[in-house]
Length: 126
Image (cartoon, rainbow, N blue to C red):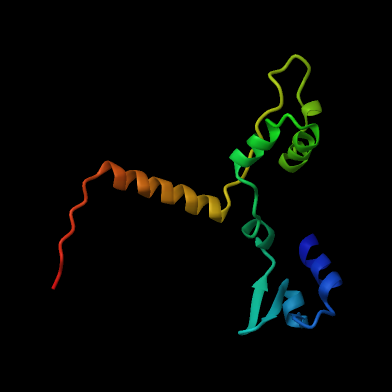
């Protein structure tokens, strides 16, 4: 709800943004693309279009010896070394939600592994 209200307030006057009373009531909006107008719904829009960094990237940045890069990684991951309790094992690994790109990559790796574990034979059809 906050996202769509902010969107209406921020870009309502942009020439490629459109939202009539029907759309506002249904929490929808339209973007005028080069190929035509496309209507979007705000429900789940932020989560669906979230593009989080891969876990490995965050871990790599967190392991940096450069203090600035390490602090930046803590901000990105949403954890900080001060978050961990004293005497604990250190900061916990950030819980990242798998993005669509991450899901695709994971599925592609699984498919590649299945192909590598089999001996496919091809039959030519005429």
